[in-house]
Length: 483
Figure 1 (cartoon, rainbow, N blue to C red):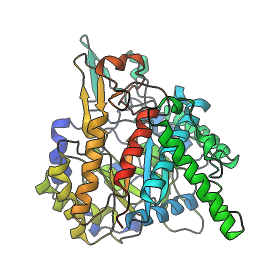
Figure 2 (cartoon, rainbow, N blue to C red):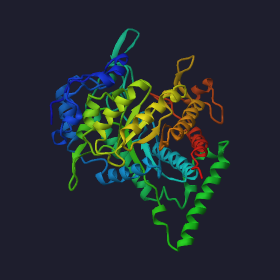
Figure 3 (cartoon, rainbow, N blue to C red):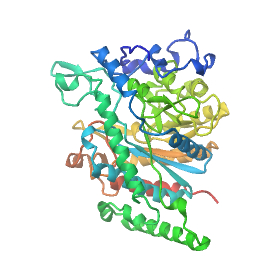
Figure 4 (tube, rainbow, N blue to C red):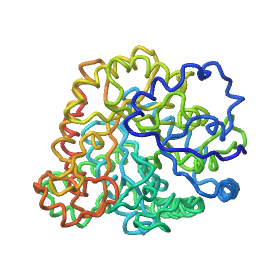
């Protein structure tokens, strides 16, 4: 294992230029060989948006102890997801990815986990009906504990302390003890992820996600939704379809008896991801066994930086978020180089681009991204994250997002893909199954003044149960295959 290094946050004003022009003198990825790659290879690169741990010896000890613990997911699960994503990339499946902006240790609770599964199941029912495609369900859970920060320190009333990097690094309370980055919190993150996965697997094995009984997935809140009747009609149709297939064939439709969930998180905290990356028997290469589907955030996608270096060596399906910081004129070179680094063999299901432009910028930027991907000649799954580009602050300083802006970006993305000879293969939401008030709009018409009624997020605003279900219903109508 390599020696841990002190890593830092790049000032936000500089990271845009760093994406392409970090260093033209460093060796490019096509010139290196994968047998030279190790999980700690990233330490030789510039690592952005990492906390500075005061005690490097404790960091090394925590990494070493974590590396000895059992994996959280298996390589066979990872390969299964990769095969399904390969089908989504050619239009045969559709990816639904959703969950919290940042999980908290305090919300590792049965009711919270159950509600997340239920809303994803409900949304997937609607999308199956609308897209006429099988839906891949991927949760932003069981590991989404780290968050990038624009600055390494936060100042309040003249007092400067380390920024809150997520529960896996430090705590949100603004005091010196809470904000001190603690490497042993990676162990707590591992434990919470394991508890979450164990509960999810127990629920599924116990019949929670049985497609013969979609009515069991109801949330109590659904009956209050203005679109409740539409949802119940969808449930009825799917139940009838399952029963029809069983009557027609005379056998139980075994592969419809349950649905699978996969996990995902931003692979941000590289010491943690390094410790969870292993070689497994009877398979080549290295797998990041902390999650099925890690992604690189927009702020850490520098072509010659540590995150791309780490991700190029793992066998998982991976995603890269792309936003307006990369201007259309920069996209051909950026896409070509990052595809060469992360997707050199055009392995089916390997690479996903998650575009996050915002309602006001998607029409300007997305066509250039699609054309740049098409120019590589490789198959990449294209997914829309309509959340992050549509964040704003209210007059009172509350961070929120508009339901209408989110919907507008999604609808525009669907149309632009079709016009460019591409297709939208999935959606990526920040959502919760709980009754929060963090995003405005939707059928109930939440306003800025309503946000204080149930605002619980520590980082970014999420769609609540009702807004998420309504969103799925609206976009499902736009995703109906043409005859």
